[in-house]
Amino acid sequence: MDALPLLGLMLALIVAGKFLVWSIVVWLFRYPLRTAIAVASGLTQIGELSFVFAQVSRSAGVVEESIFSTVIAASLVSILLNAFVVRAALRLVDRGVPARHVGQTSGYTAVSDRAIGIENRRIGDHSDRLDGLNFRELTNP
Image (tube, rainbow, N blue to C red; front, side, top):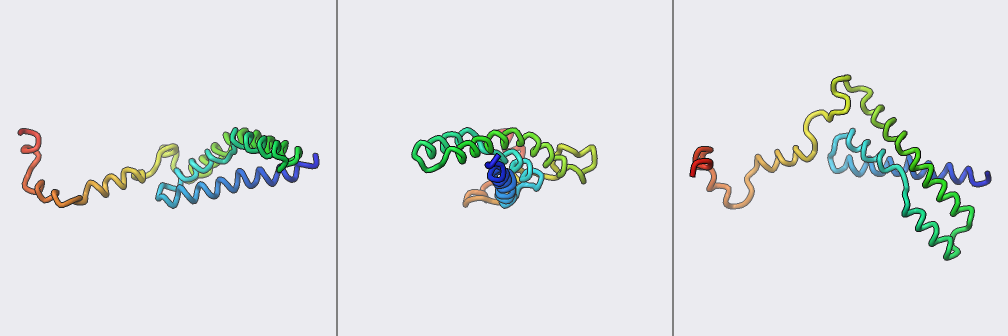
C-alpha cells in the first residue's frame, strides 16, 4: 500500500506522457490528427522489456525490491489499460464526425499526398524526353 502513490505517478507518466509525446511526433510528420491519436494511444504502455530492465537493475542492486514490484505492476496495469485508452481516444476523435464517416480518414492520407506531390513534379534531367510522348505511344510500341 505504500507504493500506491508511486504506482499512480508511474502510470500517469507512462500513459499520459507517452500519449503526448507520440501524438506530437506523429503529428509533426504531417499525419492527420486522428492517425496521430490512434498511434499514440496504441503506444501508451510499457511491455516486457521493462521486466528485463527492472530485473537487471534489481540484480545489480540499483533498484530496491519495492521499486521493482512497482515497475512490474505499472507495466501490467498499463498493458491492461491500453485497450480502454485506444477505444476512448478514438471515440473522442470521432465525436465530431458524422456517423457515416466514423472510422474513415477524411481527405488524403499523408502517404497519398506525398505520392501526388511527387507524381506531379518533374524529377531529374530526363523528364523532358517524355513531353512529346502520348499515352498511345507508350502502350503500343
